[in-house]
Image (cartoon, rainbow, N blue to C red):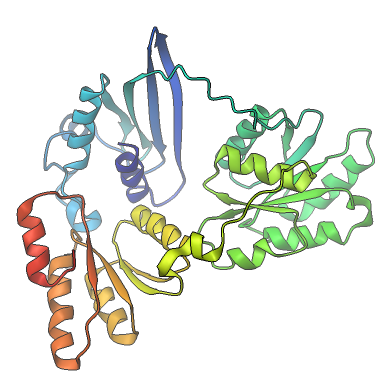
Length: 369
Protein backbone atom coordinates (compact mmCIF):
# COMPACT_ATOMS: atom_id res chain seq x y z
CA UNK A 1 0.00 0.00 0.00
CA UNK A 2 2.80 2.40 0.87
CA UNK A 3 4.74 1.53 -2.28
CA UNK A 4 1.68 2.29 -4.39
CA UNK A 5 0.87 5.61 -2.70
CA UNK A 6 4.49 6.78 -2.65
CA UNK A 7 4.92 5.75 -6.30
CA UNK A 8 1.84 7.76 -7.29
CA UNK A 9 3.00 10.77 -5.27
CA UNK A 10 6.43 10.76 -6.93
CA UNK A 11 4.86 10.28 -10.36
CA UNK A 12 2.53 13.28 -10.03
CA UNK A 13 4.92 15.61 -8.18
CA UNK A 14 7.23 17.37 -10.61
CA UNK A 15 8.28 20.04 -8.09
CA UNK A 16 8.44 20.13 -4.32
CA UNK A 17 8.55 17.05 -2.14
CA UNK A 18 6.87 13.86 -0.97
CA UNK A 19 6.66 13.10 2.75
CA UNK A 20 5.52 9.97 4.57
CA UNK A 21 4.19 10.05 8.13
CA UNK A 22 3.06 7.22 10.39
CA UNK A 23 1.53 7.28 13.84
CA UNK A 24 -0.49 5.34 16.38
CA UNK A 25 -4.22 6.17 16.23
CA UNK A 26 -5.50 3.93 19.02
CA UNK A 27 -4.26 1.09 21.17
CA UNK A 28 -6.47 -1.66 22.57
CA UNK A 29 -5.71 -4.97 24.21
CA UNK A 30 -3.75 -7.04 21.70
CA UNK A 31 -4.24 -4.68 18.73
CA UNK A 32 -3.10 -1.27 17.51
CA UNK A 33 -4.59 1.00 14.85
CA UNK A 34 -1.98 2.88 12.80
CA UNK A 35 -2.46 5.76 10.38
CA UNK A 36 -0.11 6.34 7.43
CA UNK A 37 -0.05 9.52 5.34
CA UNK A 38 1.67 10.20 2.01
CA UNK A 39 1.83 13.96 1.46
CA UNK A 40 2.87 15.53 -1.83
CA UNK A 41 3.04 18.94 -3.48
CA UNK A 42 1.89 17.62 -6.85
CA UNK A 43 -0.90 18.35 -9.30
CA UNK A 44 -3.73 17.62 -6.87
CA UNK A 45 -7.27 16.41 -7.56
CA UNK A 46 -10.64 18.07 -8.10
CA UNK A 47 -13.73 16.98 -6.14
CA UNK A 48 -14.98 15.10 -9.20
CA UNK A 49 -11.67 13.28 -9.59
CA UNK A 50 -11.61 12.38 -5.89
CA UNK A 51 -15.04 10.77 -6.24
CA UNK A 52 -13.73 8.34 -8.89
CA UNK A 53 -10.07 7.89 -8.03
CA UNK A 54 -10.56 4.61 -6.14
CA UNK A 55 -12.65 2.98 -8.88
CA UNK A 56 -11.03 0.19 -10.89
CA UNK A 57 -9.38 1.21 -14.18
CA UNK A 58 -9.96 4.91 -13.42
CA UNK A 59 -7.32 7.62 -13.78
CA UNK A 60 -7.57 11.26 -12.78
CA UNK A 61 -8.52 12.20 -16.36
CA UNK A 62 -8.20 10.96 -19.93
CA UNK A 63 -4.66 12.30 -20.36
CA UNK A 64 -3.25 10.65 -17.25
CA UNK A 65 -2.51 7.25 -18.76
CA UNK A 66 -0.89 8.78 -21.83
CA UNK A 67 1.38 11.03 -19.79
CA UNK A 68 2.12 8.95 -16.69
CA UNK A 69 1.20 5.35 -17.53
CA UNK A 70 -0.55 2.92 -15.20
CA UNK A 71 -3.78 0.94 -15.28
CA UNK A 72 -5.82 2.59 -12.52
CA UNK A 73 -5.83 -0.58 -10.39
CA UNK A 74 -3.31 0.38 -7.69
CA UNK A 75 -5.59 2.47 -5.49
CA UNK A 76 -8.44 -0.02 -5.88
CA UNK A 77 -6.23 -2.86 -4.68
CA UNK A 78 -4.80 -0.74 -1.86
CA UNK A 79 -8.28 0.15 -0.60
CA UNK A 80 -9.35 -3.53 -0.59
CA UNK A 81 -6.21 -4.45 1.34
CA UNK A 82 -7.01 -1.73 3.89
CA UNK A 83 -10.50 -3.14 4.40
CA UNK A 84 -9.11 -6.64 4.85
CA UNK A 85 -6.75 -5.27 7.53
CA UNK A 86 -9.56 -3.49 9.39
CA UNK A 87 -8.83 0.01 8.11
CA UNK A 88 -9.79 2.63 5.54
CA UNK A 89 -8.09 4.54 2.73
CA UNK A 90 -8.92 8.13 1.81
CA UNK A 91 -7.63 11.30 0.22
CA UNK A 92 -7.64 15.05 0.84
CA UNK A 93 -6.62 17.18 -2.11
CA UNK A 94 -6.94 20.45 -4.03
CA UNK A 95 -6.06 21.07 -7.65
CA UNK A 96 -2.57 22.54 -7.89
CA UNK A 97 -2.02 22.27 -4.13
CA UNK A 98 -1.02 18.62 -3.77
CA UNK A 99 -2.63 15.66 -2.05
CA UNK A 100 -2.66 13.71 1.19
CA UNK A 101 -3.47 10.03 0.70
CA UNK A 102 -3.96 8.29 4.04
CA UNK A 103 -4.84 4.83 5.24
CA UNK A 104 -5.30 3.02 8.53
CA UNK A 105 -4.58 -0.62 9.38
CA UNK A 106 -5.33 -2.64 12.49
CA UNK A 107 -2.35 -4.78 13.48
CA UNK A 108 -1.87 -7.43 16.14
CA UNK A 109 0.63 -6.28 18.72
CA UNK A 110 3.71 -8.40 19.34
CA UNK A 111 3.98 -8.65 23.10
CA UNK A 112 7.54 -9.99 22.98
CA UNK A 113 10.11 -7.60 24.43
CA UNK A 114 12.16 -6.30 21.51
CA UNK A 115 14.66 -4.35 23.61
CA UNK A 116 17.88 -6.22 22.90
CA UNK A 117 20.12 -3.75 24.69
CA UNK A 118 21.52 -2.20 21.51
CA UNK A 119 19.72 1.15 21.84
CA UNK A 120 22.36 3.86 21.55
CA UNK A 121 22.51 6.72 24.03
CA UNK A 122 24.12 9.98 22.92
CA UNK A 123 22.87 12.07 25.85
CA UNK A 124 24.99 15.15 26.46
CA UNK A 125 26.15 15.35 22.86
CA UNK A 126 25.23 18.12 20.42
CA UNK A 127 24.96 17.97 16.63
CA UNK A 128 24.44 20.52 13.88
CA UNK A 129 22.26 19.33 10.98
CA UNK A 130 23.15 20.85 7.60
CA UNK A 131 20.35 20.02 5.17
CA UNK A 132 18.66 22.46 2.81
CA UNK A 133 15.42 20.44 2.89
CA UNK A 134 13.40 21.19 6.01
CA UNK A 135 11.40 17.93 5.92
CA UNK A 136 14.56 15.84 5.55
CA UNK A 137 16.25 17.72 8.38
CA UNK A 138 13.24 17.15 10.60
CA UNK A 139 13.43 13.43 9.89
CA UNK A 140 17.09 13.42 11.01
CA UNK A 141 16.19 15.43 14.11
CA UNK A 142 13.46 12.99 15.15
CA UNK A 143 15.78 10.00 14.85
CA UNK A 144 18.48 11.79 16.83
CA UNK A 145 16.10 12.75 19.65
CA UNK A 146 15.18 9.07 20.00
CA UNK A 147 18.82 8.40 20.89
CA UNK A 148 19.19 11.38 23.23
CA UNK A 149 21.25 13.49 20.81
CA UNK A 150 20.55 17.23 21.00
CA UNK A 151 20.35 18.75 17.53
CA UNK A 152 20.07 22.12 15.86
CA UNK A 153 19.41 22.69 12.16
CA UNK A 154 21.65 25.26 10.52
CA UNK A 155 19.71 28.14 9.00
CA UNK A 156 22.83 29.58 7.36
CA UNK A 157 23.55 29.22 3.67
CA UNK A 158 26.01 26.46 2.76
CA UNK A 159 29.01 28.79 2.60
CA UNK A 160 28.18 30.40 5.96
CA UNK A 161 27.95 27.18 7.96
CA UNK A 162 31.65 27.53 8.85
CA UNK A 163 30.97 30.87 10.55
CA UNK A 164 28.24 29.23 12.63
CA UNK A 165 30.61 26.41 13.62
CA UNK A 166 33.41 28.86 14.49
CA UNK A 167 31.09 30.88 16.72
CA UNK A 168 29.78 27.84 18.56
CA UNK A 169 33.27 26.38 19.01
CA UNK A 170 34.14 29.39 21.19
CA UNK A 171 31.12 28.85 23.45
CA UNK A 172 30.82 26.55 26.46
CA UNK A 173 28.67 24.14 24.44
CA UNK A 174 30.40 23.45 21.10
CA UNK A 175 28.99 20.94 18.66
CA UNK A 176 30.35 17.39 18.88
CA UNK A 177 28.99 16.31 15.54
CA UNK A 178 28.16 17.63 12.08
CA UNK A 179 25.35 15.77 10.24
CA UNK A 180 26.01 16.86 6.68
CA UNK A 181 23.94 16.29 3.56
CA UNK A 182 26.07 15.47 0.51
CA UNK A 183 23.82 16.99 -2.18
CA UNK A 184 23.62 20.57 -0.91
CA UNK A 185 22.45 23.11 -3.51
CA UNK A 186 25.35 25.60 -3.34
CA UNK A 187 28.35 23.55 -2.28
CA UNK A 188 28.72 19.76 -2.04
CA UNK A 189 28.81 18.15 1.36
CA UNK A 190 32.32 16.79 0.81
CA UNK A 191 33.56 20.28 -0.12
CA UNK A 192 32.16 21.62 3.14
CA UNK A 193 33.68 18.67 5.03
CA UNK A 194 37.12 19.51 3.63
CA UNK A 195 36.69 23.14 4.67
CA UNK A 196 35.88 22.00 8.21
CA UNK A 197 38.93 19.71 8.29
CA UNK A 198 41.15 22.62 7.20
CA UNK A 199 40.08 24.69 10.24
CA UNK A 200 42.22 24.03 13.38
CA UNK A 201 39.44 25.44 15.59
CA UNK A 202 37.14 22.60 14.50
CA UNK A 203 39.61 19.75 14.87
CA UNK A 204 37.44 17.91 17.42
CA UNK A 205 34.26 18.08 15.33
CA UNK A 206 33.15 14.69 14.01
CA UNK A 207 31.45 14.51 10.59
CA UNK A 208 28.71 12.13 9.41
CA UNK A 209 27.92 12.44 5.70
CA UNK A 210 24.34 11.64 4.56
CA UNK A 211 24.40 10.32 0.98
CA UNK A 212 21.54 9.11 -1.29
CA UNK A 213 21.61 5.36 -1.86
CA UNK A 214 22.81 4.68 -5.39
CA UNK A 215 25.02 7.79 -5.48
CA UNK A 216 27.62 7.06 -8.19
CA UNK A 217 30.65 7.79 -5.95
CA UNK A 218 29.28 6.08 -2.86
CA UNK A 219 32.17 3.65 -2.33
CA UNK A 220 34.72 6.39 -2.96
CA UNK A 221 33.09 8.67 -0.38
CA UNK A 222 32.89 5.85 2.16
CA UNK A 223 36.70 5.61 2.14
CA UNK A 224 37.34 9.36 2.28
CA UNK A 225 39.36 10.32 5.35
CA UNK A 226 37.67 13.73 5.55
CA UNK A 227 34.57 12.18 7.13
CA UNK A 228 34.16 9.95 10.17
CA UNK A 229 31.11 7.99 9.01
CA UNK A 230 28.81 7.68 6.00
CA UNK A 231 25.08 6.91 6.23
CA UNK A 232 22.89 6.31 3.20
CA UNK A 233 19.44 7.78 2.62
CA UNK A 234 16.53 7.06 2.88
CA UNK A 235 17.49 6.98 6.54
CA UNK A 236 16.97 4.02 8.81
CA UNK A 237 17.11 4.81 12.52
CA UNK A 238 19.51 2.05 13.52
CA UNK A 239 21.85 2.80 10.59
CA UNK A 240 21.98 6.48 11.56
CA UNK A 241 22.68 5.52 15.18
CA UNK A 242 25.50 3.20 14.11
CA UNK A 243 26.99 5.95 11.94
CA UNK A 244 26.87 8.47 14.79
CA UNK A 245 28.38 5.94 17.18
CA UNK A 246 31.17 5.21 14.72
CA UNK A 247 31.92 8.91 14.31
CA UNK A 248 31.95 9.51 18.07
CA UNK A 249 34.00 6.39 18.79
CA UNK A 250 31.16 4.70 20.66
CA UNK A 251 30.46 1.97 18.12
CA UNK A 252 31.11 -1.71 18.54
CA UNK A 253 33.32 -3.61 16.16
CA UNK A 254 31.08 -5.00 13.45
CA UNK A 255 31.59 -8.20 11.56
CA UNK A 256 31.79 -7.44 7.88
CA UNK A 257 30.61 -10.06 5.46
CA UNK A 258 33.01 -11.13 2.76
CA UNK A 259 32.41 -9.79 -0.77
CA UNK A 260 31.28 -13.28 -1.75
CA UNK A 261 28.69 -13.33 1.05
CA UNK A 262 27.48 -9.82 0.21
CA UNK A 263 27.32 -10.17 -3.54
CA UNK A 264 26.90 -13.86 -4.32
CA UNK A 265 27.33 -14.80 -7.95
CA UNK A 266 26.10 -11.44 -9.33
CA UNK A 267 29.31 -9.52 -8.64
CA UNK A 268 30.45 -7.75 -11.81
CA UNK A 269 27.36 -8.70 -13.82
CA UNK A 270 26.27 -6.06 -16.36
CA UNK A 271 22.50 -5.67 -16.14
CA UNK A 272 20.07 -3.67 -18.26
CA UNK A 273 17.14 -2.52 -16.09
CA UNK A 274 14.01 -1.54 -18.04
CA UNK A 275 11.53 0.17 -15.69
CA UNK A 276 9.39 3.24 -16.37
CA UNK A 277 8.38 3.79 -12.73
CA UNK A 278 11.19 5.88 -11.26
CA UNK A 279 10.52 4.78 -7.69
CA UNK A 280 10.72 1.09 -8.63
CA UNK A 281 13.77 1.86 -10.76
CA UNK A 282 15.65 3.48 -7.87
CA UNK A 283 14.87 0.57 -5.55
CA UNK A 284 16.01 -2.00 -8.12
CA UNK A 285 19.21 -0.08 -8.93
CA UNK A 286 20.08 0.18 -5.24
CA UNK A 287 19.56 -3.55 -4.68
CA UNK A 288 21.59 -4.52 -7.74
CA UNK A 289 24.45 -2.20 -6.79
CA UNK A 290 24.44 -3.88 -3.39
CA UNK A 291 25.07 -7.20 -5.13
CA UNK A 292 28.03 -5.69 -6.95
CA UNK A 293 26.30 -5.44 -10.32
CA UNK A 294 26.93 -2.83 -12.99
CA UNK A 295 23.49 -1.40 -13.84
CA UNK A 296 22.25 0.56 -16.84
CA UNK A 297 18.69 1.84 -16.10
CA UNK A 298 16.36 2.93 -18.92
CA UNK A 299 12.80 4.26 -18.84
CA UNK A 300 11.12 2.73 -21.91
CA UNK A 301 11.14 -0.13 -24.37
CA UNK A 302 12.64 2.03 -27.12
CA UNK A 303 15.51 3.10 -24.83
CA UNK A 304 16.01 -0.55 -23.86
CA UNK A 305 16.45 -1.70 -27.47
CA UNK A 306 18.91 1.10 -28.18
CA UNK A 307 20.93 0.37 -25.02
CA UNK A 308 20.97 -3.36 -25.79
CA UNK A 309 22.26 -2.73 -29.30
CA UNK A 310 25.02 -0.45 -28.01
CA UNK A 311 26.35 -2.68 -25.23
CA UNK A 312 26.79 -6.28 -24.08
CA UNK A 313 24.63 -7.29 -21.10
CA UNK A 314 24.58 -10.44 -18.99
CA UNK A 315 20.90 -9.99 -18.10
CA UNK A 316 17.89 -7.81 -18.88
CA UNK A 317 15.29 -7.08 -16.18
CA UNK A 318 12.17 -6.09 -18.12
CA UNK A 319 9.10 -4.31 -16.76
CA UNK A 320 6.11 -5.94 -18.44
CA UNK A 321 3.68 -3.01 -18.21
CA UNK A 322 5.04 0.25 -19.66
CA UNK A 323 3.33 3.27 -21.15
CA UNK A 324 4.69 3.34 -24.70
CA UNK A 325 5.92 -0.12 -25.72
CA UNK A 326 5.36 -2.82 -23.13
CA UNK A 327 7.96 -5.32 -22.01
CA UNK A 328 6.48 -8.19 -24.01
CA UNK A 329 6.73 -6.34 -27.33
CA UNK A 330 10.19 -5.02 -26.41
CA UNK A 331 11.36 -8.58 -25.75
CA UNK A 332 9.90 -9.78 -29.05
CA UNK A 333 11.89 -7.14 -30.91
CA UNK A 334 15.02 -7.96 -28.93
CA UNK A 335 14.69 -11.66 -29.77
CA UNK A 336 14.13 -10.83 -33.44
CA UNK A 337 17.33 -8.78 -33.48
CA UNK A 338 19.18 -11.66 -31.85
CA UNK A 339 18.17 -13.99 -34.69
CA UNK A 340 19.97 -11.67 -37.10
CA UNK A 341 23.02 -10.91 -34.96
CA UNK A 342 23.38 -14.15 -32.99
CA UNK A 343 23.85 -14.59 -29.26
CA UNK A 344 21.29 -14.78 -26.47
CA UNK A 345 20.64 -12.46 -23.51
CA UNK A 346 18.44 -13.74 -20.66
CA UNK A 347 15.38 -11.52 -20.09
CA UNK A 348 13.54 -11.70 -16.77
CA UNK A 349 10.04 -10.24 -16.53
CA UNK A 350 9.21 -7.75 -13.77
CA UNK A 351 5.46 -7.73 -13.09
CA UNK A 352 2.93 -7.66 -10.28
CA UNK A 353 0.53 -9.80 -12.31
CA UNK A 354 -0.07 -13.39 -11.28
CA UNK A 355 -2.44 -14.13 -14.19
CA UNK A 356 -1.58 -17.23 -16.21
CA UNK A 357 -2.25 -15.33 -19.44
CA UNK A 358 0.43 -12.76 -18.61
CA UNK A 359 2.93 -15.46 -17.73
CA UNK A 360 2.19 -17.30 -20.97
CA UNK A 361 2.65 -14.11 -23.01
CA UNK A 362 6.00 -13.50 -21.32
CA UNK A 363 7.21 -17.00 -22.19
CA UNK A 364 5.99 -16.74 -25.77
CA UNK A 365 7.89 -13.46 -26.17
CA UNK A 366 11.09 -15.18 -25.10
CA UNK A 367 11.37 -14.15 -21.46
CA UNK A 368 13.04 -16.45 -18.96
CA UNK A 369 11.37 -17.85 -15.88
